[in-house]
Image (cartoon, rainbow, N blue to C red; front, top):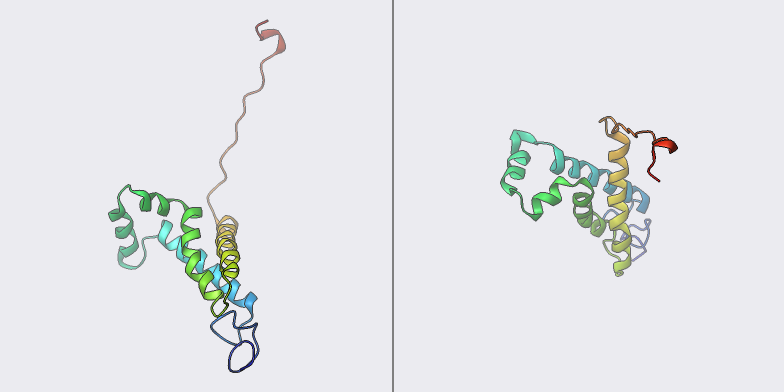
Length: 133
């Protein structure tokens, strides 16, 4: 059997589909992680299913994780990292793909976020004459 599956091609079985390049799998995984994280973090979903699920979580540790886009993207990325590393006997591939997918989802979120940036206000320093001696 050739590297990459029964039809050859690919990169030593790094992904499920033998003709998919590792970069393609990573890009698909990154966008999927971003989309699912957005859905679970901030959207109600069809028929408000996800919104009701978030309400039922209450205020526990899982609810706090869902409220944090960065935290949630890390956990959503884990199965996608395993998918990308499918067929590889080495856990380092998963350990590298996992945070990179989460980081990509965070970067995509920052690039597409339409909320205005927080206003920065800083008071001018006091005059030197007003400082106590």
